[in-house]
Amino acid sequence: MKITPTLEENLKLLDSFLKLPDNWNGYGAKSFSPVLIQKVKDIIRDLEIQLFIFPTSNSTVQLAYWEDLGCYIEFEISESDEMHLYVENYDGKTAELDVPCTADIVNKAMHKYFLD
Image 1: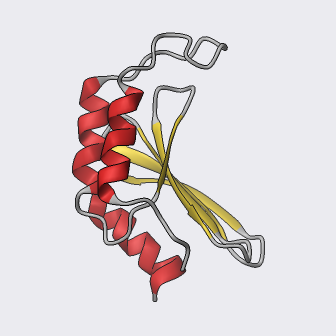
Image 2: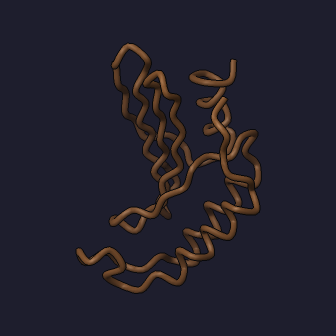
């Protein structure tokens, strides 16, 4: 299993997103909503394994995990009640869908693709 960030590291990282100004990426990205950052914090506090966290230019937060053999998963979280899930399996097959935005869904997906 890949070494992932700790909860404390991810919470600090999310706090740093709040300091990003408009146009933080040089391409017009908007700053991050405190409501969104709190939502992501609430989700990651209930995860069985911490994922890698990235800001996106769409003012969303991406949680991602991958293994060197090619399996990849990401969850794009916005202020809506759903998050976008993208998965690429070891055989190169991909799937994308919108799912309820909960820690339970993230944990179930991680078990399905990585932990079981």
